[in-house]
Image 1 (cartoon, rainbow, N blue to C red):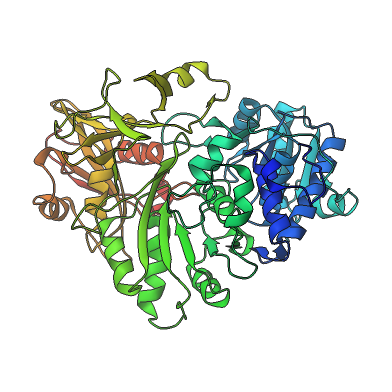
Image 2: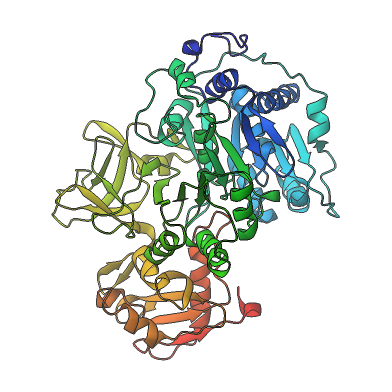
Length: 569
């Protein structure tokens, strides 16, 4: 099958290739609105044409199949256009964290082996400095954003002018289900790594699999996708708050578009809770996706301060991907948004979307999964954990899993393993299996705190802390301790005008956590630092805690330390 075949081709001829699948949606509902941004309201046919134009430009610039092209953009149609353009020519788009400084960009550009980059003008100064140490870029395009930084990337072309001068047609070579998709994961420790997936695998693992309502009813052949696309004007409208540079952002975008839905983005990709609710009302949004409490709580504060200000009758669900919602946040969402679905969507760059389930009788608890043919927990010997045994092992996913980490065979061998006659992905989340087959997830093993031989998983303690009325946000880390090896330390941001101390925290946690899990020290900071996607920045929290207790009194006497804004590392 030629990917450049006329639009009248049979959809059944299309492979499970992301570009082919998208084009089948375009041919089914060309007039449906694909995206709504502050710059444009764009139909599927228009999005396809703009992507074709960019794809032909990239070919002319020397971008070849398998080449990697960076995307350093805030949310907007240009981000999705660049991903689609790469898919159309069998190149590999690479998500670049737009908050990286020059040294971090140098690392990522080199590690990914980028030969092209599409970026927003505001990021030019950092990019220019990083490019000097990398070189080898064949295609550089700058997207105007209303800002004119003092330092520009002189060799970069103008994005819109380039599209205007390029070929709008679908004349491309044959594509394959084996073409590659890459998502760089910032992780919580260490340097970011690129996770490589086959198109077919990521389509089923994280982009809906042709099931826009997430009923688990995946398509069995590519030609079925067209029959799953909702008619023009009736597709799901989703507000994408997570940045597209984060996996949760583009998984949301593509899973929704593969059903003929509409993606709505915030102006300039900047999070503003008032603007978010305004867009829900104005665009009749059905689903809002957030990244944990860092995004959900500001949204809740707006609703609590001005009840009834926004007409949210179109809203059906609020989902969190990339970070779980604390029980207290779920309860408040349920109170302020009665009748709406509130859900945690559990997954990772190495597994795709695994799912999310509230435990029986506690809809506001942490996400729990169930053992099935694709999800299990493996012990140290790579055998399934016996349900009810209490053994803590590693969450494991099989079936549609990644190919490898880009350029890292050692980490690939540790994460993607053969066991029980199948290939499994072990992303690092520690878990156990209860008697009824429910998987209880504790958090990343690399972050666990070993205190007196007992393991403490930060997620559990953080969830408890964030349920306290005075606490806005919290990150838990381990600090050295002469007696126990490590002790639990909480870095906490309190609500405006409030205060908190260690004894208050310990008293609150006493009937909710086992004694060794209760924080023995607390650092109060003006603001918790998180990644642009809302994930906890554990290295930052560790530095803050170490600095605060650098001259600490005796190890077994916990204290509260406060750090002023200007003193933060």
